[in-house]
Length: 256
Image 1: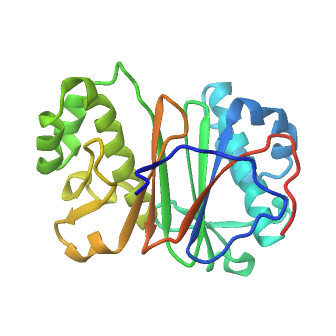
Image 2: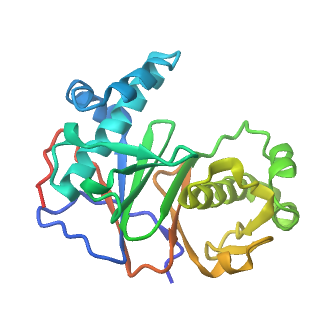
């Protein structure tokens, strides 16, 4: 059984996408910044306005590059010019394509952290993704006590100290990916459900206090985007295959 997916490949020209498959795209934002001018031309007025709200130029650039790459990638699945794509947002801010452009079928989610963006895509069911860099200066014990469930905190404290930091971020990405997939964000308290976090344990949603049936409705998938990051995809139901693609930079993806 594969516990984590760590191999990333450039997509083939005959890239296919079927129901029950998951595609995850990895984008190195510094490399993709070479496409910034082209990306800016595809962004909506709302996206450009949001970019301007970032105080630092680096954050503005990363936002525009990640949204531009999202548009470029989605355009290949729906065969629509990236500039023409239109998004709508649920009450909690989760984006989707409008129904007329396939939003009722194609589902996606985006996350980025410290120069790496991940875009998870599937069909006909909800999906979420989260990536985090393992920050050695992060006060993980205090944060875990505040936001993790009693079970998760007990497991975290039981682990050898040298692996607790990675276990914390593993747990964090699993919880974030799930609440992003559900589409309700932090309106779902992080301490009201349990996930696995110990090394070697398959990623899984274990228990949801008020909705016990949730645990059997979701699959969690562990990703390793780089040596110092961890990531999780949460997808409704089961999946038959996951393919991890590397954004090809300035190359033009072949339309499908």
